[in-house]
Figure (cartoon, rainbow, N blue to C red):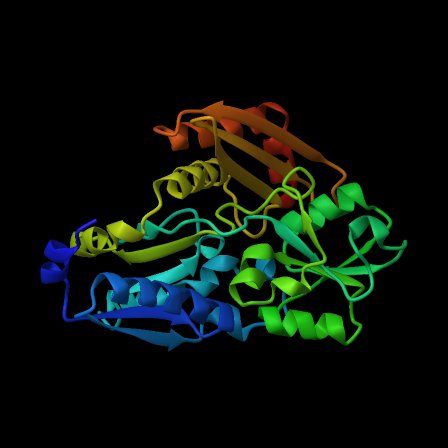
Length: 316
C-alpha cells in the first residue's frame, strides 16, 4: 500500500493516552511504533495516566463500578485535547460508548484464550481439592465453579506482575490470566496451559486492542485505517452487541466469543450465576457483514433459556 498521500495529510504530532501499567504501556508503544512506521514525519508521544481502576486494588472491580474505571480519565484527556487517541484492551471498554466518543480502530486480535498459570501444577484438572485459584473475573469464576466445584476461588487484583508475584509467594495454587497480556509482555513462558474456549469462554473483546477518539475527529479514523483489522472488528462487534443486549458488565458473569470460520461468523455466548450452579450457553452462525445481528441473536437465544432470570437475581 502506498501511504504517500496519507503521509502528506498526517498531523505534525499525535498524543496517545494510556494507563501506566506495563501491559497498557506495551500496547500504547505497539500502536505508536506502527504509526511511526506509517507516518515517519509525525511526532507520536504517549501520555501515561493512572486511572481510578489502577488505584483501588483492595476491592473486586464488580463492586466499585466495573471496568469503565480504567477508561474515564483517558476520555477526559481526549475531551480536553491533551491527547488525540486512547489505546485500550477492548475487554476493558464499556459496552456503551459515552456521547462524543467512538472506537475508531480495532487492531488484529492476539490469542483470545484464558491462561492457566501455576508453579506446581500442569493444568486445572491436576489441582487437588481445596486448591486456591485466583481470578479477578466473575466470568472466569462462574465457569471454574461449574467445572471444578472442589476448588476454592479467591479474588485477585493488580497488574500482571503483581498477580504473578502473589502466585510466586504461595498465596494461590494457580491463577487465571488472559493469554494475550502474558504474551505481549514477553511472559508466555509462564503459561502452563491454554484453556480452550469450550472450557473457559473468553471475555467480550479479549485479546483485541481498541483505539478510541472523539467522534468529531474523522481525520483520526482515516489516519488509523491501515491498523484496523476488519475480521477482528466483526468478531468484536458481534460480542459487544451480545453483551449490550444482556446489559453485560463486570457485575455480570458472561462471556462471548466470535470467530470467522469458512467465511461465516460463528459465535458462542454464556450467562451464569456467580456460583456456577446455573450456566446457560448458546451458539449461532451469521454473516460477517452483519455482526451485531449475530450478537443480538445469541443474546436472544440465551434469553430464551432463562438469561433474564439469572441476570435479575444478580440485581436483587
